[in-house]
Image 1 (tube, one colour):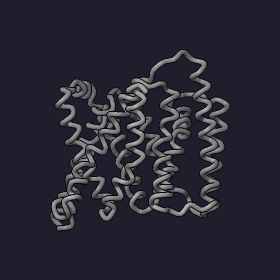
Image 2 (cartoon, one colour):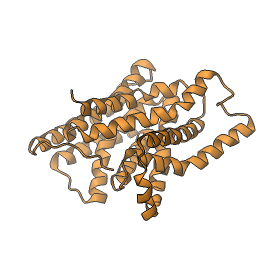
Image 3 (cartoon, one colour):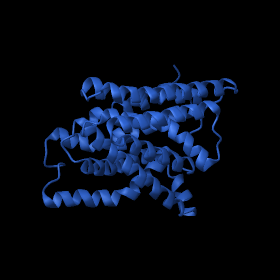
Image 4 (tube, one colour):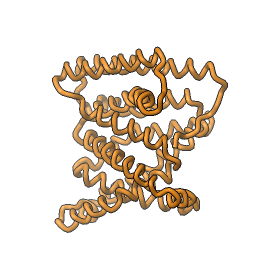
Length: 298
């Protein structure tokens, strides 16, 4: 296998096993984990940019400071997505979180239609309709709205839409987003320290190390994905993206033994059927085109 697909697989594998990482510090509040993720991510990406001497994007932002508003929006949406996911994992809702990322590609299709003027193809209409029926079934059968899954779907979908229209690549874009979130995160961590309730520096060594490495756990998959997307066919990326939610689903059901009754299975079958149709449509569409490699949407 070439380096491009291998990098993409590595990214999705990393995202797929991320629940294991959050479970190791599940005793901490999701807000504290999120704040550390922001602070350490910024420090880590700044080191990487320094090593690469990759600072041209700073001039781009200086010439058009209004773009900061765009990244402020994506930063807030990303923080909501991260918080929801961390909370869901540590509150034993990994299966529902995986559902959100199974639905996400189909929701992104709708966003493309609404905001980018794209047209739905017949198979895409069928896939989106089946997925909607699956969500409706899960809502009715459980008597409650699957808010975790749909919050992750909507936030990640809009985050992808905003980043698609930006001019910065993954690493510089993440840097700007972390700069936007850095001061609120640092203020919150300082508040915890002043109240004597902070985990970092007051807990065991493993917890301190895991919190400090949240930046690495965040940035490395993004770097792998950016490289993989540049050197991998669109149809391949379309299939590989299901690695992450599949691993999350397996972890939730078979490792952490979350309940998965028949009613939930039926709802997931709706979603999986929709994804099979969606993947088939991608395969057919790209088979009719000349082979080409993917350029990251950033």
